[in-house]
Length: 331
Image 1 (cartoon, one colour):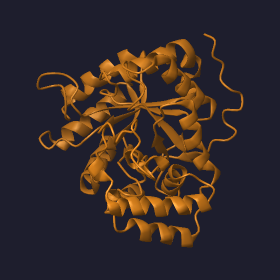
Image 2: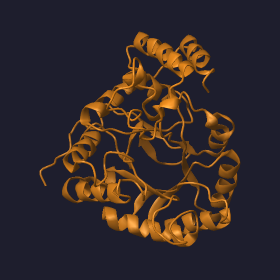
Image 3: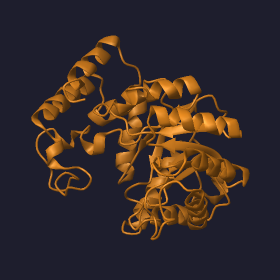
Image 4: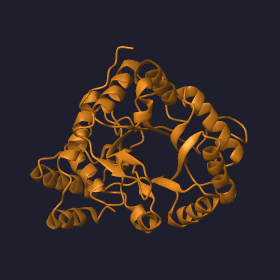
């Protein structure tokens, strides 16, 4: 093992309490949805992970199906843990999820106890871990009783396979019911991971209020709206962009109204000495219910750009009003 963590890793990062729990998370967390699978360059993935930790990012977020190939992002992290980050395991918060399709047959997706327990066992083997810090149910299951799904999360904690549990993609009503069941079982809901950004505000229709009242942390994913909230699309559609490749982002998403909003938001960001992406991340962290923001990275340089969002997290009332006026036609 040649890696030795930076001695300055905790000097510049902000750590925030997750809901009413005892756990603090780094204000930026690294998501391994893209760029960490078996089809990606391992040396690049390793560099990003180690650089993230050197910069104070302690939370790495995965799911059973992250890759591609599904499962391979967890294997990548497992290799880095074995060769580099193993001695620092107790300084890391590692999360994974289950809920989406993972294997053939009736037990390979959704929310049954059979699937959730089996999936986490597989995830632990891929990562070479005895436990994860946070285990999420990745999406609500319309057919499995929510009592069974929550009982599975409670069981997993009691088995010592996870320290905390969370929810992802649950709406306000579902979250309220799930949280009540978990609280009765004695395993409180730590955190909720919803899609949330300047253009996608569904969480503001009740969910954030539930999280705030119930003392649940919030960690938004897709903070940059799959790249729309960056400087990539200020002029045209770059040939190497997600939109050009129709990779999770279609050209139809960039309407004239949205392009005008992006340009106007970029002007505010520039007046704050930030890029549009940095301001979009800072805007989320300005919400007291948000514990951490999940960012992706395809390179060390891109991660450093996102980290600079932490240099200016305060907004004036005038800036917030302007942002709302700009976003309101596209929300």
